[in-house]
Length: 268
Image (cartoon, rainbow, N blue to C red):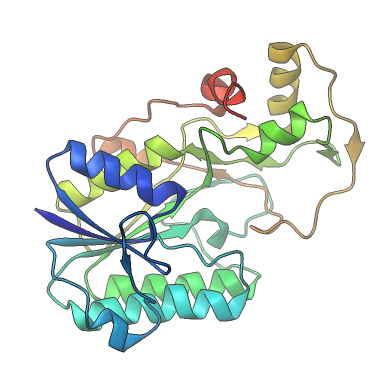
């Protein structure tokens, strides 16, 4: 089996490792062509037309911290070009749980309304629509952390963390390696035309998370402050459920961010 892997960064390299361990041949693709990957701008239909055939496609390319124009090119145009070029090949698009804009602390499932309040979120939904229209799979990923990368823990250990307002906002996260295993699971179980939340099993309120970290690392609790309205993923307050994914047979190795915190801290 061959995997065409669009995006070979932090998550993409973990996906490649998991698929290779499963016996797949992985054909990685990146914009620059670094690390032995195929150079391709997926927003360019002519470039996508030159990509090799495969049995399955995973699109996890990042927008490079860009705004709506980058989201349009990488996600929307990318998914459209891939489905046009490979109409018979299943595509899995990695979207984001930021498409859920709930602010009431409710539990959100794949059936919950996804009405993002930002242009980037609406563009993710358009890329999802294209993917699902081609009988593909959408994986909505919570905030990714893992070895050498964890914004929450890095800010806490540096003394830069702030508990926003009363700390009630829920943090929804997923370990990079659990996300990679979930994507492999969805590729190999044959699910098609469906949406899946990829998050860990224990959303934590910001206050509870920092209280646990304070105890774990013997550090003071961060001070309070106003909410950050400019968060990249938007300011939301919700608990993302991974129940559908777990019922399909996947289980996270790290069901809670706190289960991995000490190991991750050693890599920062």
